[in-house]
Length: 246
Image (cartoon, rainbow, N blue to C red):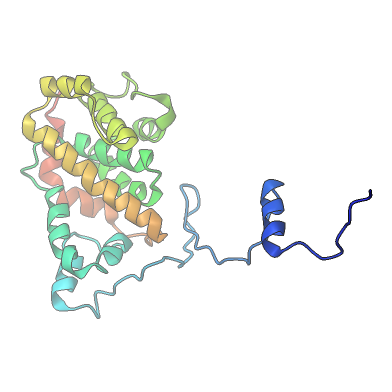
């Protein structure tokens, strides 16, 4: 007996099932996907997801917070969209620059740059590399910090303390905690305040990295006289850094 073959088309659900089972691509309508500049491409796309708050039209308290640090940057203009948290966050960010900070300036900037490198945040790197440069970091050190595939920072370029900071940040970025063995090593070289400052540093800059990448931030335009301004702003810290021998 020859089985009856229906001339009717199978229901749509059956067609979809067969399509999925056969791994056939189901076409989707094109989407507009916002892009952002990369490590090697600083093109300004103006496709940021959230607006840049303009200090000239912002309320006085938001304007003042936008001008907390020496430069107005796109990262602050994005943060200003969160009006309730913006002012206290800027106050927290300012403590990273405090003269009373316990961790050394090169260690602070190493933590910032390694956070940017491990979280693939080129804007964050671009903003902070000039700061690290005025504290004496070299091109070879920058290259090593960006190379997150090599493991520990090389002993020929970094002090023991700096290499510990690198491992500390790698573990926080990679698995959201620091192993007990490394915490024990940190306690041997760093005071309790210094260790907690490193947690604060990674926390602040990892939040910024994730926010900036998600919002598709654009690079800032060049700031005339940036290095001179940074040297003046950090003059005491630069001199203090020169005194360290380890």
